[in-house]
Image (cartoon, rainbow, N blue to C red):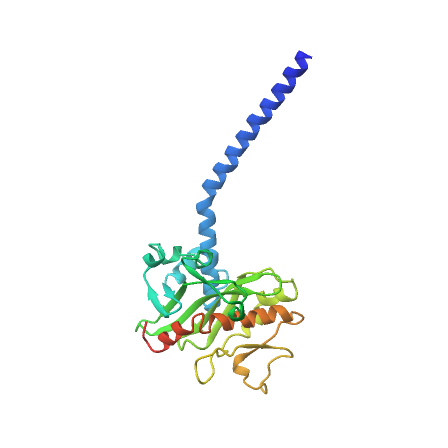
Length: 268
């Protein structure tokens, strides 16, 4: 019996030693790989910004992506006023390191959205958002890329919308994270559907409220107000409604409308 107990004890000790050993290995690997993971995440975001801005070459290398993205100015915007703020306003030194989605969970950096105003279904909105501005050699606005997000059918969709220099005409739209039904709502990733957004106009003649609509049955040359309309996703009514709502929310008065007005007037 003593020998049996000794064998059991040795087995337990060996198991504990191996458990600690492999825990250390896994923890060390996680720490060492963290910088690479962050770098890849940042590259993915930059890739999607360039794609929305119609600036992503086919088969672009990581260096090409970094070079193209470096043309943008990364700015922080206080949404209530539409004015730029310095990075230290939100406790960072580099605007690229500001996480507006993390800020949305902090009551000191965000605000709760009343249910009757929360058309995007996001619950809370950060006080400050990150935007990406591209100007030409003369300093004139060439395009601006804005982060957007909101709830579809099954998931929160995260993406970007790019506007031309008039801060009104859509140049591109895309989502880099979504969990909608493949073949239905998941068609938000279909290049043919995304291409329909190019050239669509956000605001009506009064330049106050966004007028984007996703419509069933397709948009033709004879469709009334076709400049504001995009084909709805086939068989995905709720995802289509979610995309329409989140785009109009973020381009509306509680999103970037005030900032875009300042851009058009040359005030920022």
